Amino acid sequence: MGMHPKLSVTIGDLKLKNPVMTASGTFGYGREFESLVDLNRLGAIIVKGLSLKPSKGNPPPRIAETPCGMLNAIGLENIGIEAFIADKLPYLKRLSPAILINIYGTTIEEYAALAARADNIPGIDGMEVNISCPNVKAGGVAFGVDPTAAEEVVGKIRRRTAKPLIVKLSPNVTDIVPIARAAVSAGADALSLINTITGMAIDIHTRRPKIANVTGGLSGPAIRPVAVRMVWQVAQAVDVPVIGIGGITSAEDALEFFIAGATAVQVGTANFVNPRATVDILDGIEAFMVRQGIEDIDEIVGSLST
Image 1 (spheres, rainbow, N blue to C red):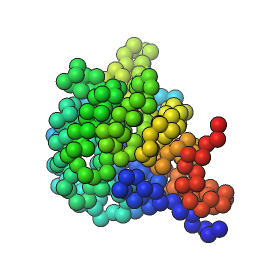
Image 2: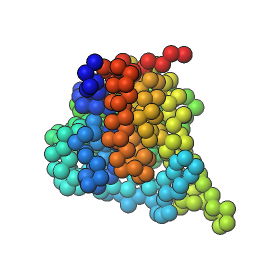
Image 3: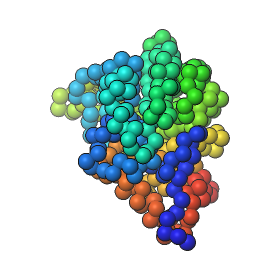
Image 4: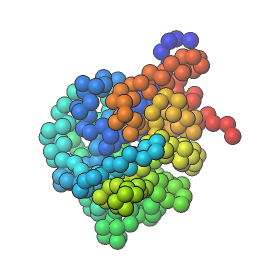
């Protein structure tokens, strides 16, 4: 057994040197972390969600700490696709990880326009679609909670881009499997899950919500068992790679997701606590494989026995 197990994974046409990715919204545009972590060791960098036009996001306060996690209602603040291409992408293109954008819109047309704009841009290696956003034309119901809406938006995006397409699923549903199947039938190359779970925190002294938006997205270790369960369900139901997200702070956490059926993982909230979390997790996965005599990460993926 050599000391260097194979960690590379394939997601659609994307070849990643290892399965550790950053989760959108938790790693800025990448460069913010350059003095804290060796960015070239990562499998992929997913930048914060981009819209057609710049967005200021929600009014503060917009983050609150909760037991084993945090609530956020940042409101997808971002510089917009044009500023990203002009100002952020040139730096990212010099790095070795795959660079993925995360896109969101309030209408299907916005999603399609974003996909078309990014499609012919060198240096954008793929896109992740956030379908947890409210569809303004359908009364504000999120695209990701209805299989028909999910299929429609993913299908429109698929027709506008040849780049690898990852669809990020919302956990705020009774059954995530029909949504997963709808996204795949519409052309998703992979699925990432889960996005945040809707939550709320109240200041008992002021009797006001702790974040101005009232509700927010719960992330961190508190949601990990839910995420592992949903990844396990979806991995059995679809024939595309699944990327696990939700409260991963250690190699052990990541390995749970691989065993449940994930091909890769995204590290999110942990970056706020430990900016080196991604590489620490990568080192830990490799050390585990060496100790166990596992030569290829593929041997772990989907190896759960029930």
